[in-house]
Length: 457
Image (cartoon, rainbow, N blue to C red; front, side):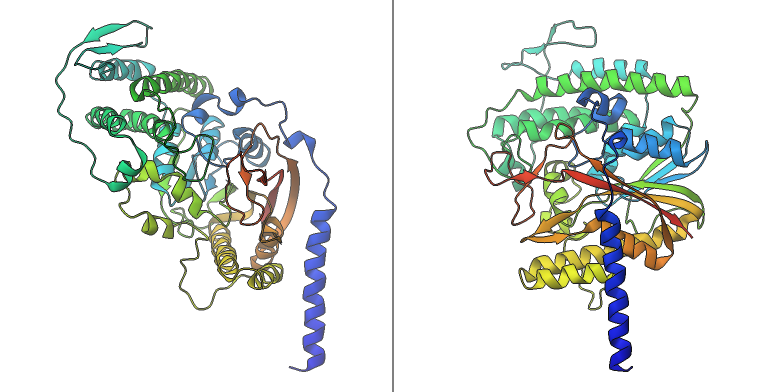
C-alpha cells in the first residue's frame, strides 16, 4: 500500500471521528427525558425500591422507550440486566422480556422484582417468619410490629450455626453477624422459592446498613465508629415496605392483565443471550462503565453471604472491563476508541488496558445484539462519558462508531441531564473510581448521559 493511500485512509478515519464528535457536540438537552419532576417515591414505585443498586437507570426511561418503540407482545431484551428495571417495565407493558447479568446478586434481585406474589401468601409467610425472629436478649423475643402493627412476645430456642467466611468477620460485628445468621437461616427454611427469593432480596438490601461499611460511601471502606442498627428491626422494616410494594405490583399486573407476561432473568454472559436469531424487537439497557469491577466490590457482602463466591478476586474477573482478558489481539472496532486507549497509555498503562478491554467486550455485546435483533429492531443504550487521568473517555461516541461499523445506523440520540437527586453518586476526577461524598475533590459522576438509539440494518 502506498504512502499516499495510507495518508488518504488516515484522513478519512479522522474525518469520521470528527463527524461523530461534531454530531454529539451539536446535541441539545432534551428536557422531556430528564424527568426532573420525579421524586424517589416515583423512581421506587412498585418493586423498583426492593434493593439498592449502583447507578441504575430510572424506570421512567425504560417505560417510555418500550412504549414508544414497540407494540404489544414485542420481545424486549436487556443484556446488562442489573436489578431488572427493564424487565419489570416490559412486564407491566405486556412485552415479554429476557435479561442477562453475570452478577448472581443482580439476578436474585431481578428475580424478586419481576415476580409478583399473591399478597395473601406473602402475609402468611411474613407472619410465620416473624414468629421465629428474636428481638431482645435473654430469649425474650419481642416483635415490634407485624403486618397488622401488633406487638407480641414469644420464646424459642435457637441453635446458632455461624458463618465461617473471613470477609463476613471483616465486615460485621460478632453480635450483628449472629443476628443476621438467624434471619438468614429462617429465610432458607421457606419452601416456596419465589417467597424465599423475596425475603433473600430484602435480607441482601440490609447487609450494608448492618455492616461497618462506611455510610453513604460506595467504596468498600470500614467505619469502626459506625452505629449499627438492630438487624431484626431493620429487616422487618424493609420487608414491610416490600410487602406493600409487592401488593402494588400485583394489583397493576392484574389491572393490565399482564400477570402471565414472561419476564426471564438469566445469570450469564452478555455475549451469549439465550434467544433465537432475529427474535428481539427492542434492547433497552444501561451497561456498566469501565470500572465495572466496582460492582463486584459493592455486592461482595451478599455474594459472600449467599455463597456465590468465596474469592472476591475471582468474582471480579467475570465483570466486563476488569482487565482480566488475556487475549493477545483485542478488537476495538473504533478509531476513536483507539485514540482514547493510546492517549491513556501515556498516563496510565493499567487504565489504558482496562479501557481497551472494556471497549472490546462492549463490541462483542453489540455483535450479539445484531444476531438476535430483528431487522429494523432498535438497541437503546443508556450511557454517559467519563474520564481517567484527565483523558476524556467518550463511551457514547465510541459505542456509536462501533455499532455503525458492524451494521447499525443512528435512529436517534438523546442527551439528558441527570438531576442530582436521582443520581447523586460521586467519583474521584483522577482515578475515575467511586468516592465518598465527603471527598473535597469529588465531581458528580455523570451530570448528563446519552440514550443512544441504534437501528439494526
